[in-house]
Image (tube, rainbow, N blue to C red):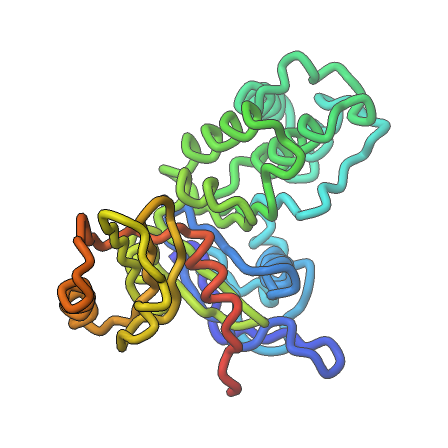
Length: 309
């Protein structure tokens, strides 16, 4: 595995910012690392990139422990932090050459890599400007370019599309897709459409603990241990009727005569809905299992209180 996080803990005073987090990411995977503000995402990323020491546990990059081999780990990592630190008084191409030289690139190889990442990140027109003259979106592109300039095998990106307009977001997504076949990519975001567009898998943490580690498709089909059923009648009904049925946790009105039912995994729920319709003489037009939205899944998982160790 390119990235291995095992039983990771980070404590600040009395608070556990990261509390027994474990997951792995393989080569060629794009994994979304999700969680509400304060969940421990950035702390985990900072430990994985050698910026913070863990209280306990291990993180390995390509088999190298981040505590035992920090310099070798940094050689194989590209990191874009949440607050993108840049030397604003430097020109774009000058800054990228500087970052490349820090990674021991020189001569033709350095010139080649700077040219490649400038093109890849759409910075051709901006490369001769000072960074302080760039918009927030272009500064974010420069941050991504510096993470890529030494051609790392593992990329860790904390909110990589912050401040970008819709066109720029799609361009950066294209960059991430194009490099992912031969790299490991882990990125955090609050944009669920981005997860659906890019990720095969997501890891969700809440209050410092992993609450989900699943392919995106599976997570949508079975949110938080339940199912989502769309029911449609010929005419509107009183949604309180569903409260009588065992296995229904929540009801949402979803348009004229349609209702979204958040249910448990009880396979008898659908037969109970048919029986409810028949017993109350309610013409049932349709009933189908729905793919839940990632927003709903995320909300359900992160509103739950993780169990104590």
